[in-house]
Amino acid sequence: MKYKIGFIGAGNMAKAIIKGLLSASIVKEDEILASASSQNSIDQTKASLKIQTTLDNTQVARECEYVILAIKPYMVETILQEISDYLSPDQVVISIAAGITLDQLAEWTDHKVRLYRAMPNTPAHVNAGMTSLCTKISSEDPSYSYVISLFEAIGKCEVIKESLIHAAIAIHGSSPAYVYMMLEAMGDAGVLLGLPRDQAYKMAAQSLYGAALMSLETGLHPGVLKDQVTSPGGTTIEAVASLEKSGFRSDLIEAMVSCASKSIQMSTKK
Ligand SMILES: NC(=O)c1ccc[n+]([C@@H]2O[C@H](COP(=O)([O-])OP(=O)(O)OC[C@H]3O[C@@H](n4cnc5c(N)ncnc54)[C@H](OP(=O)(O)O)[C@@H]3O)[C@@H](O)[C@H]2O)c1
Image (cartoon, rainbow, N blue to C red):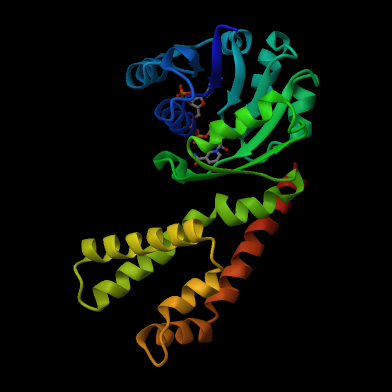
């Protein structure tokens, strides 16, 4: 194959993944080909990322070992019908389209390629993404660890059963929104307490980032980390008690269960 990785669609998510792959040196610029629907878009992508581009989706199917579908979910069926005849069994197709299942992908590619379904999230733009990966391919297959490494270039990647995708949507697909709500509220509280707004947001964001990093790097139970900040009769336990009284934890659990339920409802409507 002429190229290692091809993207069909060169929008926000494709660009975030390409930047991550290049900065992690997983592939070189001349090993990536990307297609989009407009000349303007491919010109801009070529100029900014120095990769090869095309308006012809079938070129991506003919010339790339790994084909990443980075188009809107409603376009996946049509585009796979357009390129399917050009795919061969030695290729791998990875879809990042929300809500498109492995069975649908298999049907639309005539069951002839190795398939992966990935769900990244928006922090992928700053190489701090979380991707859930689903596949029916064995972990012995050479593509398995390679596909994981592609998503590890933009953050962390976990392989899950496809039936757990709704839980993954709640815990990392949609959760940046709840965290931004918390960030905004913490900033407002800082302002209420007299801090300039820009400093309040910076302090709040760095604390969220630092707390997340502590959890990832120490591997300690969140309750242990919380207890380390909470001295007897101190300030933190006042805030903790107030949050418990207003149902902070149960609100979050309920919100995430609603999120997963909506995802299930949307997938069964199709
Ligand atoms: N954004 C996220 O945070 C996020 C997170 C998880 C999953 N996803 C999934 O990622 C996928 C892409 O999302 P996005 O935000 O990157 O979308 P986007 O920025 O709108 O990009 C879509 C790309 O598809 C191209 N395109 C449209 N029609 C095409 C065609 N017929 N042939 C080839 N390319 C075509 C567009 O071309 P032009 O550039 O010429 O318009 C554009 O480059 C979606 O399925 C979404 O569910 C996104």
